[in-house]
Length: 232
Length: 232
Image (cartoon, rainbow over the protein chains, first blue to last red):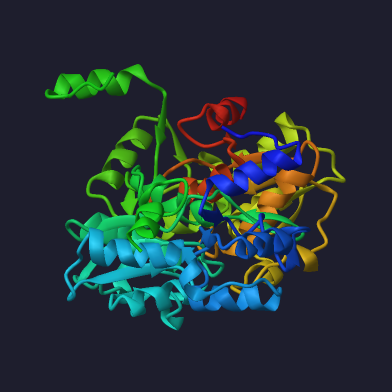
């Protein structure tokens, strides 16, 4: 339950009560490239009191390493092992929970950061930033040779979303037996400094709609990412 | 209720009972560029018995004139005024049901056929096939000047769907007071000769998901298109 803190004692009690503090990033620490007032001071206070600070983000467009650069650019102290993103958690889910065989591949709708986390977990993937799939050209099943090794479709926020990617992802789930349908997170919108844009959940919405089926979601508020933090 | 016809008399009774015969096209008359067996013979029989034949299609990628060319190429007799498509019906809905003022504009997610039907109804539109919106480049609200005259977003099957179009459509509905959210049809998939691809309903799914709101749907099975046929 949310409690409104009003006195100095309330704050001191809260600080005393918890050793580990989890923070969301987009919309909590910053909006786009603008730092939210007071965010760095709160983090500094927690570190001063020797608290563990973890950053938990559904943003799957960046790998942890790249997300660290975002912290650096805004002057917010953060270490790579303090950052838990849904891209990283998705890769861990595929390798450790699904235990997808090493000869299987993931078809990715998503950006370079998601691919980086898959690579670091030793997971083979296709799609994603491959120029062949980043096109507004027409798509026909007649000219497509599906890869029978695709065992999962993983969909995150992809600002290069297009009909070719959606058609391939849809057909992999439809045709490849046992092909899993995973999404990094289900956020309907993505907060930027100037307002809202469609989020990762909206990017996977065509697949849900075409398949009439809900995906396995990794990020908040689903527990998968938190299980992953607890395991570390 | 569907009835299985088994005898010659059953067929004769059915033929006798109705003066006007409505046919779907994709998946009924043809699959992609392949004519479905027996389709032309049935149509010829109906015309021979002086029946009215109407073609009703949710396909909003083509205007009626262009759809006529598809009939011609497959050797199926059809006349433009026998063809009722969800693109045409959407344009009629905007001008005659919504009665959108002439100085207002439609933001289009859709293809040339949809634009053609809007033009024929004298409706101003932006988006659609405009090269500016047909890009896989990044989109930022900071670099965008929304058009305050946009009074409706109309979304149909668009094989050039991309993040810029989705972001603009989402923000028009969010920001422009009273902006209508219309979809040509809600088909989840689109049948081609080689299999299924995502349909118009899947193209508008990101907007539904981001907005948390259902659109007004024009095509079958909604009654709007049939009202339009009845009025003709």
